[in-house]
Amino acid sequence: MPNDARSVFDQPQAAALAHDEPPALRYTSDTRFFGHPRGLSTAFFTEFWERFSYYGIRPLLVLFMTAALTAGGLGFDRENAAAIVGIYASSVYLASLPGGWIADRWLGLQRSIFWGGVLIALGHLAIGLSALLAHQVFFLGLILIVFGTGMLKPNVSAIVGDLYPEGGARRDAGFAIFYMGINFGAFAAPIITGWLSEKYGWHWGFGAAGVGMLIGIVTYRIRTPRNLGPIGARPSADAAGQRRVRNIVIAAAVVIATVVLAAMAGAFTINPRVVAERMTIVIGAMAVLYFGYLFLFAGLDADEKKRSVVILVLFVFSACFWSAYEQAPTSLNLFAKDFTDRRVGSFEVPIVWLQSATPIFVILLSPVFAVIWSALGKRGRDFSSPAKFAFALACAGLSYVVMVTATNRVIAGGGVGVRVSMLWLVVTYLLQVIGELSLSPVGLSSTTKLAPHRFVGQMMGVWFMSIALGNLVAGLIGGNVDPEKLAEMPALFQHTATTLFVAAGILLVLVVPIRRMMEGRRSG
Ligand code: GLN
Image 1 (cartoon, helix red, strand yellow):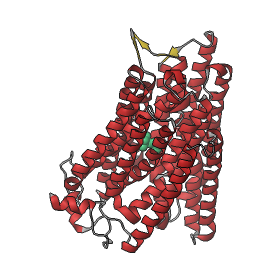
Image 2: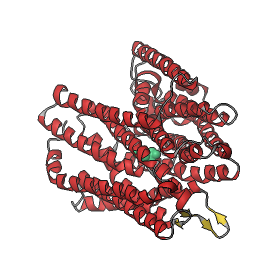
Image 3: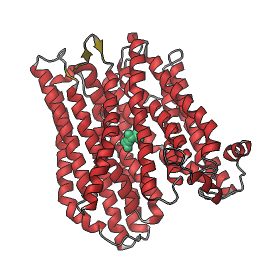
Image 4: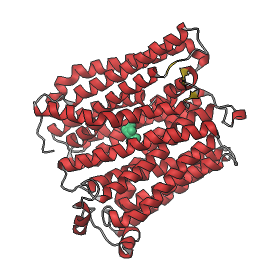
């Protein structure tokens, strides 16, 4: 309907409506998408294509950057390349903080998602063109994807929430379906981009990811008026507030563009490892300052303070978990390249296909975990969130024990040139997914439940910061998988495993005191 189309993208500036104004009822009570609102299908496919593009290029990055110039790569050393992947992935999560703010205070969810998608597609275009232009354009592409994803990812999740104003089990089911969209995208992407990049060249792989995002934004634009209507069409700020945010964003964009252009022109050089190390410190310091502010100046009562301590503990251990899990595109991807026998008959499985193991396990195991948690819950035997976190850390620890064993087999077999079965990596990913399913949804829901009401949005940001921190640390560790350092590799994986087991042990000791802290008044 043309009227609807106008209301979505050219809404009147003076309006200051919440996301769930009455006309939305027609869209939220709809049941035409497997019993869910059709808006969920729009969110599902938009996120599918966004994750397709993200997971389509992420594992290619380290391989492309470390490939020799003669092989069409950038000829970087592994440590720097992995640090860049860490900075990139971590920045994607950090960018969701301003991304959510822009949607709330300026553009509204719908337009933020659209423009986020446009930025991502432009990023892919830049990466595609970098084959013809200078390699600096490749990094410009990554930066565009970071900002685009920051504007798209948190806001498409928020739209899913807005589709179920009544909350409850239907909303949980909606999010479970949405999470499947994420993982279907993450599963399909490496299959396609991995095959294209090995058969035809890097830029075919990068290009396919970009085409995916383009399909995503075109369908989003066409379907939004019919499927989402007014849901998420308007920001919560009034016209003056929107103008203020727009001006701040424009000023920030000018500053960022100037710095990026100066770097591209060679005005200063960037050492990725140093940047990654500094970012780790800055994010850690931001967390310390934020919690310091919360405890000292935010006027929390004793009970709210206790629950905020629990969130702080979950923040620290969540970062530990992700720093192991997010080594998939670096350490484990490099292990797949150098030390894994990928032959199946006469066919050689492309390196990045192994990355599809994680999402396929998530798709297969999510329903199993849902049944287990709810069965335990019904019997009053549900584990507390710190206990589930400890279990997740132990699983991640075990996954690295598997890697220690695999590496030792390479060494025992005679070292460089020896390749072990793909099953070692597959089992590693399986254990990590068991950890993910015990930690990720639990962390998200505990954070929203424990946060004092007026700080829920900020606490979600804290959760994203823990993932950002994990990605950075993973990038710093990830470049050490190297045939030239084969002798050090068992110790490298062992170190990750030991850290995870120690973290799990500490958390187990803390389970009882944390449970007491969580048992306080729930009114917040
Ligand atoms: N795989 C999920 C996604 O891409 C979650 C990743 C994470 O939380 N680190 O959204």
